[in-house]
Amino acid sequence: MGLTIEYIDGQTPLSEEEKEGLKISSITTRKELDEFEQLNIEKAIQWTFGKKIKAEQLLSEKFIKDLHKKMYGDVWKWAGAFRTSEKNLGIKSYLIPIQLKQLLDDTLFWLTNNTYSPAETAIRFKHQLVSVHCFPNGNGRHSRLMADLIMEKLYHQPFFTWGSNNLIKATELRKNYINSIRKADNYDIQPLIDFATS
Image (tube, one colour):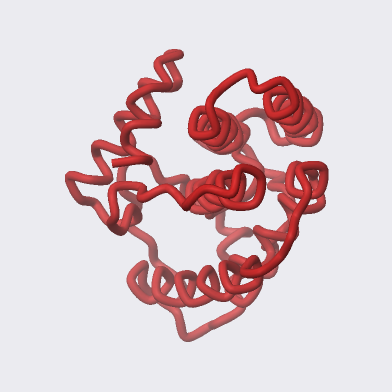
């Protein structure tokens, strides 16, 4: 039968080839997929516990890929590999390494020079990372965890609340989240900062 996914606003559809990368053949619905991915993401969060990570390590292509693989590697064969297909969001796939390197360098500059507050630095990074859209799937969750790790590992502050709810279901909270991202797309970052800290 295969995997059938109904997408909601803000989600990026997978190509048929990407769907073939599913490691667990018994998954056939979005609900089942979400459950298996969430279990994998929880393992990835545990992997970060107690780790001392320097800015140059956290803000590296290697860490970006490793974290994605830890978050989705039990579910998807392509976890941790940059996408090669074009999506409804993000830049052209061949530009991913270049744009990501620029974002990582910019963020290290912001950190070194205290350009923004800790929350604004992490949220600007998150927003630009999801805009690059490095991977076939999981970019929103990956970018939120990266922002949380910037807060925890580099600024020694608590994780964001992200509205204290599940953002992968079609809820009013998710609608507010997507709206705040769209405002950030138009250079108004404050609503996304407010959402992350509410």
